[in-house]
Image (cartoon, rainbow, N blue to C red; front, side, top):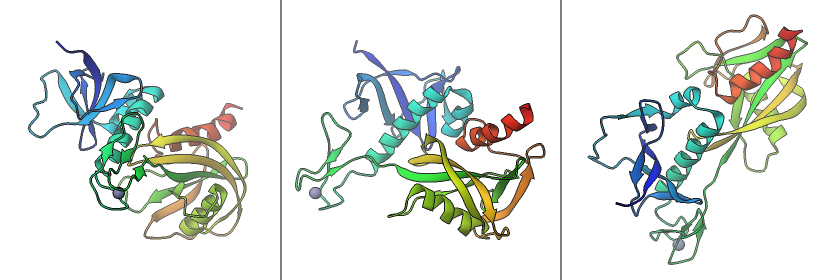
Length: 250
Ligand SMILES: [Zn+2]
């Protein structure tokens, strides 16, 4: 019997896990994505018509954020992003020839022109904006039907610094100018392949003016009167907690 490997098996943004939300062990297939540690950990998509064993279930990846440790989620996040990259780079973007998987690196190689396609992350800024000692700006996404209020976020544009992206997104989405923009932390976010880069900043000037196709409401909320905020495990949640807790503890 061949050796079993721990497997990330995905199907439409869901992952196959057992009743304790642990990863299954499977036999390795030649087409599996293996990780640098060897083939003890693999990732692949659930194959068409592949039966799901009775003790396993498909669980949305977003749901696993609250069930798993940060490390466990980040490992799964890496697997889902590498699979997504491999799925989207079957052909050379330079000459159109079919690509091969590189033997030792995460690269899709074109045998015709030699072009190497590496996995890419999209840098995305997310900003928590405070006003005075006890107010924070939260905004409701126009496309989100829930009552959840989140933070200002958006993709970094070509040729822009991270701080410029923070200021531009804030001006575009809510019409405010910021000061004291400072880096906080970062988190890989596999929806689909972002690196969330967190900043805190202070309100400088301007009246709230909504970019209505993006934001349906935005307000400065007192720390002790917050609306519904993003779920635990998201970087937005930990940013909000980090800002409001020092104040509520004193
Ligand atoms: Zn090529």
